[in-house]
Length: 492
Ligand code: SF4
Image 1 (cartoon, rainbow, N blue to C red):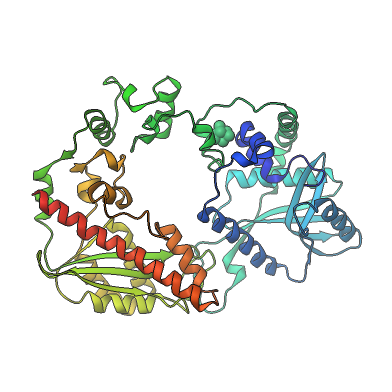
Image 2: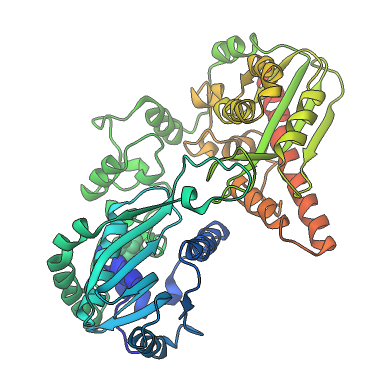
């Protein structure tokens, strides 16, 4: 790792929690597995960083060959600055055993201008901490800094034709906000270096700090002592209330007494857990079902969210629908039919998506979804981007009904739902033989990543396999709805 003790990320880690810093440095093997979603977020950050370099073209890239080459990268940075190179990417600095790498640096005779690139859409406190640390390191390496800016994504930018980087990115000077943090940075560097000199893991109990600014990578490691059904499994209870209970010694669900006031849904969860009897409000379910009319469609969308808009009339991080599954039943007892659409990942999926959807939902009848705000919002976004479909979309929206209601309102609740009304919990609780666990793609985030990866995929074999997995996943979502509705109908 070179000769540094702290880096920008380990500094942030240490500010969050000393134990986190220590575990990361000396017990890395204990860290939770990095999910595909987290890997995708890192990859996105790198890609956005490279794209932002085009705001200052023609620079010299000083990225180290590997994570062990920082010492050489620091020397190269020094030489480049000395020789008067004007624009540097990934310039490395070190002071007092703290390493800092500047995404983009402009070298002017009067001083440096530093730019830190972020793939998010605002300047947050943690970015200021991060910038303050970088300023401290570079300044203490003996350089004058004229300005320090954060470059982040403008979520109001709507792409029209070629990507306009000057519209996509916002460049905001944070110099005035990081100068007052310099003393704080110095003090924390001293404190964290001492932590790393200790010969045992710092004693820090779990708490609200484990979630901010980032969910800690040792989350599960630090929670090995929690029983299977703990206060942290209660749904709809504020995190601070859960930690209050934990700190007062109430850890397992059994330990919660009647004196503790819980929100209604959490109280139901607790009662069902304690008495082991499912909650089924037949009248409420009957009432809900009386508003569901056949012929009936069961509909589900999948979307992806490119940070950098890929298509005209789309904004950064906009959810772009690329796939749907539709099951259809003409009447309660008629055979089940299935329709689906999956974009070929060769251009903007929205036009073929909406045209196929309008065509496939032509018959009368309600359209059942699970959590209607998601599907309705996506449809409204398409109507805004493609107004030629507005009328048909408005008609479609009027037909939408929501199957989440009986579970969200706890008309039907079993212990297996673990306080959740997500279809991923409701389905195995109601129909154990049908679940997502055997599917290679088993949640929406992974479906998005898989689809996005198809845009760059060259192997036809991989494309075929991934498309098959996406179709299986989306189909399961609507089949799940069919089975859940049948279960409710069976009850009444
Ligand atoms: S899980 Fe919490 S207590 Fe454990 S290391 Fe991470 S932040 Fe610290």
